[in-house]
Image 1 (cartoon, rainbow, N blue to C red):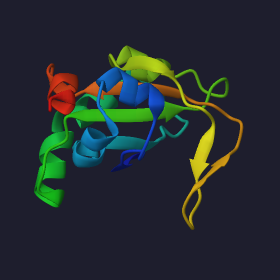
Image 2 (cartoon, rainbow, N blue to C red):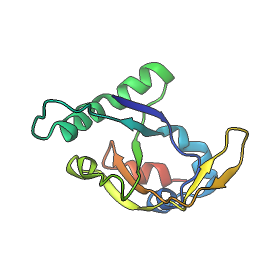
Image 3 (cartoon, one colour):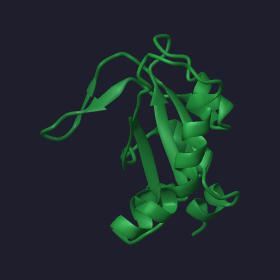
Image 4 (cartoon, rainbow, N blue to C red):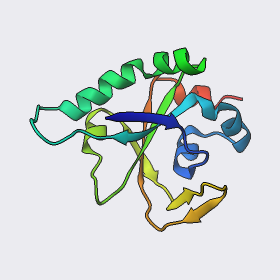
Length: 137
């Protein structure tokens, strides 16, 4: 199972890597997607299955997003709950490890709550110029 959703509204490590201001983030956040779920059920195992699934999915993500939402995606993000998970499949699929979150979660009614469990942030540019495009005025 592989699921995508809108990107996190703010994440300091991601915003620093892109190099954008809060104004540009507000204008261009829709060009990012968050890999919210990735699950391979136990059973038979195949070499490199997880990284292969990620690569195939990322290859078509922007076109699929364009057909549903009317705009492309140029950067994918995901959060890995360490030490529970290693994120090895993401690294094998060439995702970039850009740092840690601060351990906050968004509340359903609005605002944020500190849960004290920072996560690793990994990014995958869907185009080599992604961070340049996102940061340009």
